Length: 161
Ligand code: SF4
Ligand code: SF4
Image 1 (spheres, rainbow, N blue to C red):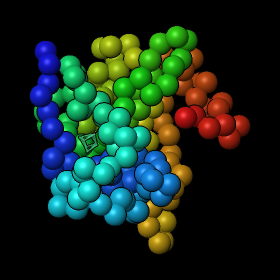
Image 2: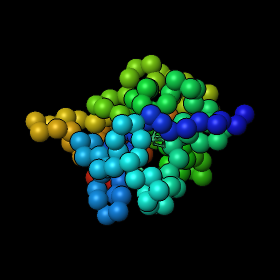
Image 3: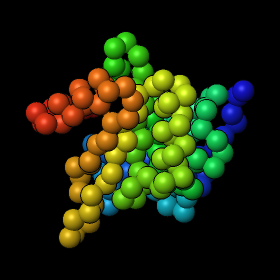
Image 4: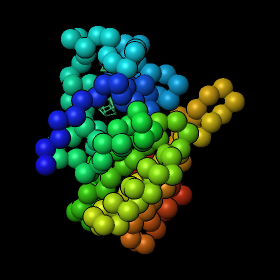
């Protein structure tokens, strides 16, 4: 199955939910790209190739297993497949558009992780008095050894990605 999906009106990755740098500017929750407006990129022809042109989230990619309703602007989750590797296999990542991934979307992702046998990392975006924290809380789902490894990395302060 090939998906012919388009981003609009989603701008979730432009709006800082996936922390990244665009033309040297750090985007993070609460600080989106200055060109993200009205559900689209206001400077599309001049957007940089990396990350803007090159990035494809898990919902947008060809042959995405994510259902239509999982478009990030509606489901409030950005999925990145194959974000990491564990024991030579893919690990997927899910990041909320907002404080936390809504339960319906999280349930779908957990079922998919079980069915596909792919470990999942998913995050929650803590709030502070002046907005969202730039530090995310990370949860692991998958084989016990995977979850133990992630817990050990978190405890030692290691960067997960
Ligand atoms: S999160 Fe996905 S669908 Fe939304 S703008 Fe980014 S690439 Fe497009
Ligand atoms: S330049 Fe356009 S595509 Fe790139 S982050 Fe900004 S709004 Fe999104």
